[in-house]
Image (cartoon, rainbow, N blue to C red; front, side):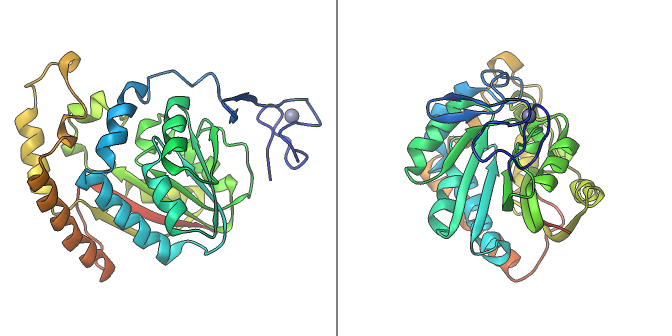
Length: 292
Ligand SMILES: [Zn+2]
């Protein structure tokens, strides 16, 4: 059900208009704007990256491998039909995969930056409901069967609030799938310039999810086999570049051969994950949690 973001009344909003207080979200480019005050604020994410990211994502091993992993977990844990929400969909690279591989789900996606939503709309080209929203203030209660947030909550200062809001917006037994960057010892300028508030330690996010009432169904590191390379690359880069000139997308521009090799390594890793191994360390972590 829909929730009024002004008076928090639940249930009466058959259209986006609160019977009790009169609140209704603004609309821009056919999209509901639930948090117009956030759009254009670059504190958490700089919309200037979208254009290049949009092109890099479809070729870069990191994004293609993450999609393979998320698709696998989706087939393991998502309900076949129902309502799906992605929080912080960016330019819609994961969203397009979900829309195509899980055709029976009704797909909705949100993003704080309108620029991202416009890229996402052009990318997905299908029946996906897009809205501009603050993940700390989700205008739904017990609405979704699945919610996904892929490398999003590290961009948000109050991540506990996001988790609580996700919990409220899920139906009972609903699934929350989340990916985050892992290990503070990998903290680098990529995180600083990339507007991350943190990388998560092993077990940290699981504890927060449990505190909110979730049951952890599966948790594993990924990008584990790339860890030695990441350590070398990040330590080597330390103090080399000034923050002002630092190019956050540099790491994603790879030659074809490097991309192919790294992609192959991560296919081996995915095979291990499919066999049931939970990898203890890695550049990222994926968690599948269920609302009790
Ligand atoms: Zn209201």
